[in-house]
Length: 131
Image (cartoon, rainbow, N blue to C red; front, side, top):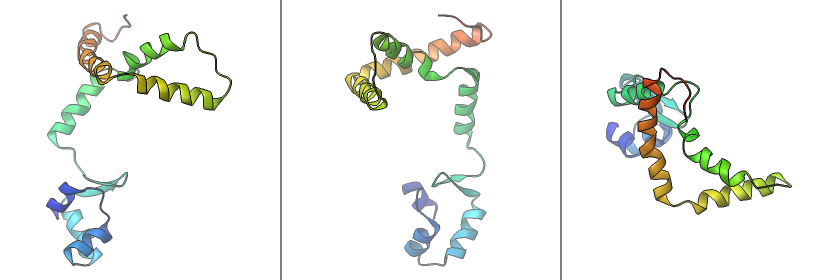
C-alpha cells in the first residue's frame, strides 16, 4: 500500500481497495496503522517528516506578515499596474493573466533565489521593515 500511495497519494480508499483486492475497511485499518490521514484529497502522514518540519521552520523565520511573493512578483506587478485603468473584473483578470504569461522562467527563478537573501536580511534586522 505504501508504494501505491507514493505513486499516487490522491487515490481514494475505494480505489486502493480495488487495486489491492481487499475491503475498504482493511484499507482504512492499514492507513491508520501507517499514520496516514486524508487532507485536501491527498494521503499524508499524520506527523510531519523531518524535511517537512525544516521547511515549515524556514517559512516561519520569514515572519507571519511577510509573503514570499511580496518581494519580487508583486513589486514588479505594481510597477506595471501604475498606468493601468480597468473597466471591469474581466479586464483585470485578463491583464493579470497576460502579465504573468509575459514573464519568462528566469524572472521567477530570480525571485526565488533572492528570497533566501531577503529572508536572511529580515531575520538579521529583527523583522524590521527595509527596502
